[in-house]
Length: 176
Image (cartoon, rainbow, N blue to C red):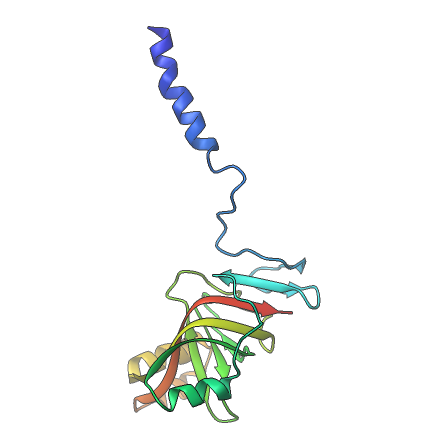
């Protein structure tokens, strides 16, 4: 009878150890972390930090090339390189990339992964996923402004929807 009682214990131990040697972290990194205080991220120069699917810088198009592709259609699957303009200060659930001096593109991750909330602005980045033209409502624009840490006056000044590019990224790679 005692032998039969050992079977569930052995099965349980095997199940607990079956993940050994795998990396189940959402954020895998080739980078050397120098400092990580809270949500601030500091990396050794030239290193790469991956979030979601691993995306290589090689073969990525510029934002101008992406805009040329979107001149002919409303959406496309693309890999784009650029710079991180801003990141959600609450959770790291979105970032923005400049398209020109006046316009930027909103990049979200559908909560599959999150970025650090600080220390990555101005960093070189490559993203892969689906870009599309979208109309963003006033409520959502105000929510984004709040997440970005805008003043109440700036939030209240948002009164009309905007047509913008939105990007749902499956992977992000940041170069420090």
